[in-house]
Image 1 (cartoon, one colour):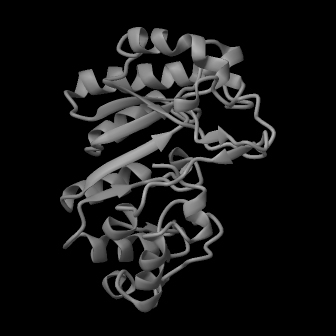
Image 2 (cartoon, rainbow, N blue to C red; image 1 turned 180 degrees about the horizontal axis):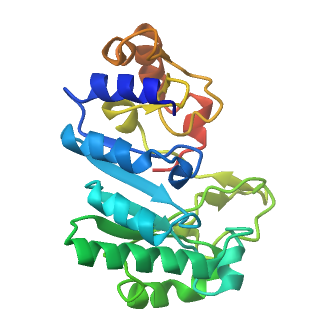
Length: 254
């Protein structure tokens, strides 16, 4: 996100916003100004969150994030061996992710930081045998908190090699036709009433599932966020979301 857009975002959301998440369809640690952006958001009174795969973490980056006042950092790690980790994180290094946690823990302790280090694990068939071990080891790996999440999969109609064995841990159920279908969604959605996504070009989207920018409310560089959040496009989307009608709602399982 260019500096000009970031300044517009911060200025407009600081008076009434609560939380800002520095990630959307990309790796936030690749942004060279990330620590400075976090610091500015923190100074403006906003709760700050970063989610990363940890592959770009360095001791210096960990220290900069802690010094900036980052409230929470989510580190994704979906396996305790390179084989189980690489089943989903193709091309990623488990050892690098472990080092990222180590760097964060060391920086937090040295600087007496208050950042919550959260280890996040997707529930996959490939790591089912490790779930108990995750619960036993997450603190020794450097995390303060462990969170399991269900995985969004593609081409799941005839099953998927990463789909967990237990149905309660997957977003899909097998129908009478022998094919897998998305589970029924709960009615309504809090997210589209409580927040939005702002892209690197300034477009305001209803949520993180609008990857194709199909339901954009407008652009923050042309219209203030307060107007965009309550304009006709936003209201129409929320009415439709009450019944899960938008296509992106069919991909979500909360």
